[in-house]
Image (cartoon, rainbow, N blue to C red; front, side):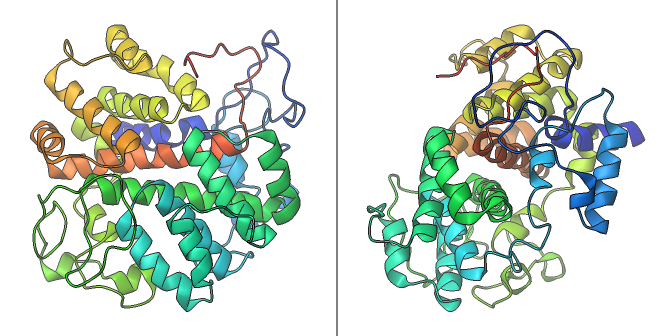
Length: 395
């Protein structure tokens, strides 16, 4: 059991703390990529961190097996403020809520949008700015910092990368710490959006759905939870006041309620096995064109028994006609979740038959964690360790 716990934790973070490999140089780096960190940010210095984060940094350094600086999403996040980003980011509540709304808009996530639209108005974000995000209108009349946050969200989630010019302007306008916080918030709420979408979380009764969507939601929800998961007992519910600090909707609804159905990532390996976990990671990396995450995990996926033929199906986005039912259910589910931002009722039912509700909740949590990492890796253009062969064909 102890090995299973360790495996699950490593799976979530393996791509986030991968260290440099001292082999032949693989090619010239872009001008804005640091040669040591192989990203747009230099290696973090321990002296830059507060006491609490130094302990996390030391643990990451002890865990690495090769010489060289830490790389990946976890290393990049060290450049942020280290504060509670939901409530106390140095950029202020208004810009934090704008960041969340920009993410919810790009993920077509109406529940996340609705709660944070109210929160954004409460902390002083102008309603006109919110409408610009809602309808994807031009940004030319906005203040520079508001505009760059929206632009970063549109580009990062729309193209799975962040161009050098957009990055340079964002860095100049926000500063390094705030920019890292913005990207970190975007990644976290992309993960939350995936959870809400996977289980078709709908508005509380009487709430207006104000986000224009390119699809119609399935009606496969329970009336009390307003999602695909049956309302649990009162003792196990997580209230929205705990999640958001304001009593905006009834208890037993939202991302916390959905996550409460799972048993947690630490035991997921013992329940579904590392092979299926790695399949979930690879299909998430493929959906986000995340070269770093894919290349970090493909070798381990082969070690734990994921068949090369199945990896090729995911790598090249091939049809699932010759794929086993459980694998096909997972891949189809992930493709709809991340490509369409809408999982239809039949695809969801198929995944529940394959995994059961509890395990599916945690598999979605695993995919969400890697979706969050993908945003951070893309924004800061994290390159592979020197000499490491890229394994994912990108557009």
